[in-house]
Image (cartoon, rainbow, N blue to C red; front, side, top):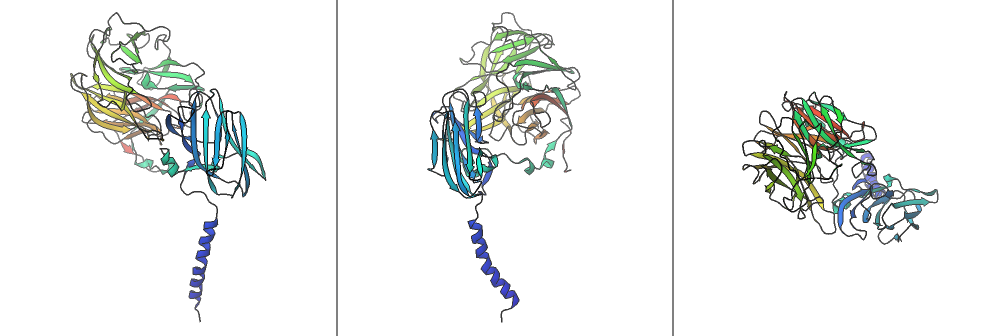
Length: 546
């Protein structure tokens, strides 16, 4: 006599193998799914040579031109998985006005040479099953490029492939060096270090793009703050700066007379100097004028004696290193005619997509002549640019620099690293030594961000910067030992909409609060605008869960 419990046990033993067999027979997506779209890379030439950077093809209906693509001659390879929409014969239609190949399952492919043209193939598929897909695209003819893949079957006319039906795996992402950003919901924001702060709108205009204060400069006289930025026209772009390149842009200023609480736009006639050719300076600058301001941009400089209301220039930097100068604004006034300039120049040995190396130069005659003092970093292969420098003592200077290094691989995109380093000079800029690393400025997916270094009234150092990774935002770190070590990362903002933000410039007010100015984009204000965060560097807290 078999007991009831034993009957149930035998039934389960019989049932479990059947359940497992049923599970194996079910079509299903790959559990290693990472993200929607196809992963790959683009190449600098149309013949799939000169590999550049990893890239995700978000959908299969694309139009590129020289602004939204990668130039007039380039190519791309993308791969992933495509999920069958039905158990049927699925017809794929490849469409392009350039050259392209579509491969679904290795060896099953169609090609178009020198379109415009279309080409079709039909494959028997199982509903819900994921199949490997690979696309080759060559943009050789210049102008606009079109690449689309559509599908149809017995119950569906030819239509677009939804983005939910294409994805790539972790293995494919690793092969193309693609950086996987964390999901925002996976971040424990309650554990992040905060400070009391107030966010202020410096300048916003619908339909316009505002950007890059670090490229233009910031100056402070008591409660009066002046900041420069670029004003362009907005055009939404996912992988590039959201600037409409077909329309003009200009460099402008915003001024605050109340410590950064309110701002007014100014457009001085000669702030950027596009209206005249650069000249050689013949009359010495009075660097110690109380209302003095100077702006560097690439090989030229401009200066003002009335707090930026009018500007003289452009004046040309001399040939200091035998290479093109790529400077932004960073200088330290020593005396009436003496001033240190922290510049950069193109360096072909730098192993990064953008090639710069920072150096220090000195003028002792009011800017009429300059002397090269020394390179600010010892590594030629690592990018160093956009120094932000403070004076510690008579001959002691500390500078924060933007760094980038692209690890090279054969037949793979370079893997970029972006961070901020701090260097010091104890001999008036002639030689420089590494002090410390401050922070990474993204996860290796974009181009990082430059630092803004401020020496606080109590002697501490504060670096502000943007983080171009999830969560996008503005951050800071403080050092109490002249840059040898840095405190925990302070999160000023984490509500950025995309990577296209940052380039901070910071100043400290008389009341001890820091005003950090940057360009930004949020869900509420999608166009990039100029914002300022006014914050207290002495009061830290962690946000509690709501």
